[in-house]
Image (cartoon, rainbow, N blue to C red):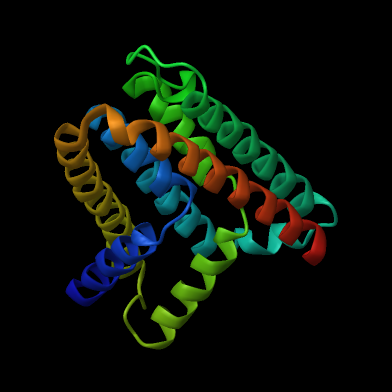
Length: 208
């Protein structure tokens, strides 16, 4: 069970460390001095990662083979990211008073909900987690219900640990660099979020 927990923690940490929409949301929020919102986004991401991993273990990946379901979910997620990216970019381009915040991440509660939606935007992740658990089972790492459960919990802890580090580092940098970095960060984050959304939409249609 120790091997399963260690493997799960490492996987959760490494998956969360990949630059993506939630990574950008978390870093941007913390850079603006809102470490609590960054942590809320990270907690949401860890929760969805754990849920998707559990669904993968339970065999829910096969549901995505239903005609139209994966395409529909993928396009909804893509549209959400494009809209969020556009709002973030507009935040950086408009005149500033120093107090602005995109509504979706203005406080920890809203940030948590936004983090849930952004992480869940790509349901095909379930397939990836299903493949990971299949490999772990074959390697006798998660070959029982207890070890699989330990691995699931560790995935969530590993994912959240990364976002704690990202939030604290980004918050420290934001405090040192100040207002002058916030506008370019908003613009670049918005472009990247919209780009991720566009790519997700294109990939969904291509593979649909």
